[in-house]
Length: 273
Image (tube, rainbow, N blue to C red; front, side, top):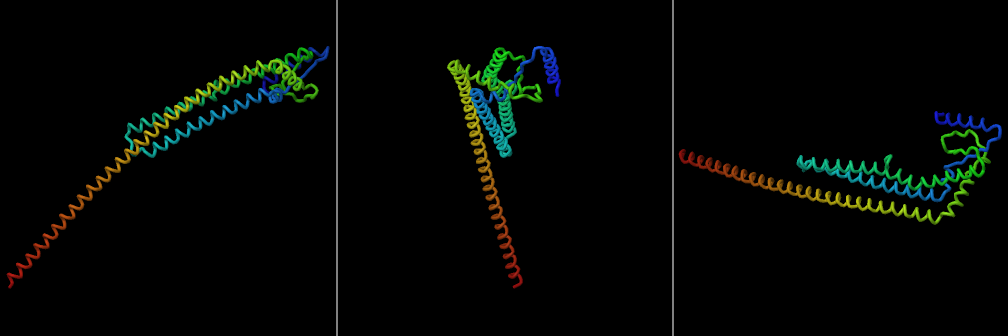
């Protein structure tokens, strides 16, 4: 049991002792249960989860592009100059940094996920808190605890659970101000959607630029490979020509020697005769 919980229990026991002369009215709520049963909270959570999944897929796509670039570089290194290799490595490093920055912007402590969660969910949590305050004042509760918070409830009577009462009050308040809240939420969602569209357009443009650069690199590599093959064919042809000429010279020399030997043999026969 940590220090915070111990301190809370000490404060609770001291307060209960102080109220013991007149009786204490205590209630508790299960904040997780309440939030899960608030439609706006469920919708906001689903939207955030969908956004987080989309951002995760974008990061995975960026990583796959970088991995492919690394594989291509390894395969083409033998055909590239040191300057081109360095240029490709710097481009990969830039893309890796952009990916890590994007990941931090989305999922970091100050990232979009945390900020949008606060913007979409915090008003709902505040509404729950306000309803608890109203119920506490109207029903004259001395204490209302959160069952899902740090204070450990070793035992609790169900009759002290006012979670459903809080939900009913939230529903009543929501009906009164449903129209204004709906417009406000739609405005926030439209703002988020506009931001997402801008980010998606920028990402699409970046992907198109990366694909174009990749095509240019592949085209240049193909041209270099074709040039290397042409040089090899030319060297092979030159080698074959030299080899043919050498063989012809050797054959001519062989025939000349045979001819000389034949003449020498004939001269030898004539001298004997």
